[in-house]
Image 1 (cartoon, rainbow, N blue to C red):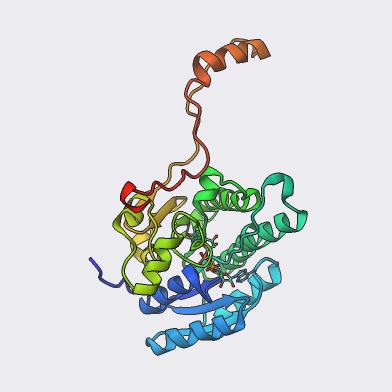
Image 2: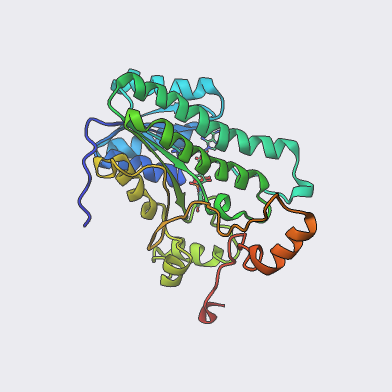
Length: 309
Ligand SMILES: NC(=O)c1ccc[n+]([C@@H]2O[C@H](COP(=O)([O-])OP(=O)(O)OC[C@H]3O[C@@H](n4cnc5c(N)ncnc54)[C@H](O)[C@@H]3O)[C@@H](O)[C@H]2O)c1
């Protein structure tokens, strides 16, 4: 079950891979044999990531730059080609949070998040797609989304919009790049990282696990699908491998003990009125049929078992 998938000869870029999930993805890809370009805004973290991979017998180099603009995406692809001769896998993972409810969110907070997540995913994927098409032998775009993009999340207009947009781009590019044998999937991870470890419901359990080295409690791993970054990395290796050659256009969740396929939006119920609808007719149809079972929204609050409250 734990057989390493062989990625020898493959070259990957992982954005935001100086720490957290990105570092785990880079290490797992290198462990499977891929050469990896580490990218981060944090110079020390990027250097340390390269050192850790080399010490474990892998091959990596780094490029310190803030993902977002096209020239950074182009530089990442150039780095992969100059150092390792080609590019096979682009993982768009770099991310930041700038939370705030709508009426308090500044233009700067909105733009910063959109720039790193949405534009950064677009520019890096475009640069990779151009290279894949030139090489002519396929490729892998692995885009990192979030439950917030699927469900909405309080205080995260910017982040939820960016992460929802990333899934929409994955579906679009899966169509556009199918003929080039490039698969495009969105990953919806959940893991204890700098980004999540202060969430009030989980903070004490994550802190205890970090200080004792004991695993997170079973209910967090299973019911909340929250585990370590290492729990998420095997999905990236699978999506990078030949084993996933026919997996594309999907939004795949992973965290703790859970692996999940997210459904795509589709029309749930449709009713018809010859010649169109008046507002009054819509009100009646909403109450009687169309709106009888409205869709839920928002990430459900964690359910901490009685024994742990
Ligand atoms: N941790 C989770 O549970 C979770 C859940 C859903 C989605 N995600 C997504 O996974 C990705 C990684 O999250 P994480 O929890 O490891 O976060 P993290 O904060 O631990 O790591 C993010 C890394 O990205 C780097 N970074 C930030 N801006 C950058 C930029 N412009 N260019 C290059 N690097 C940049 C940071 O320096 C950091 O090393 C993010 O896209 C995040 O939105 C995480």
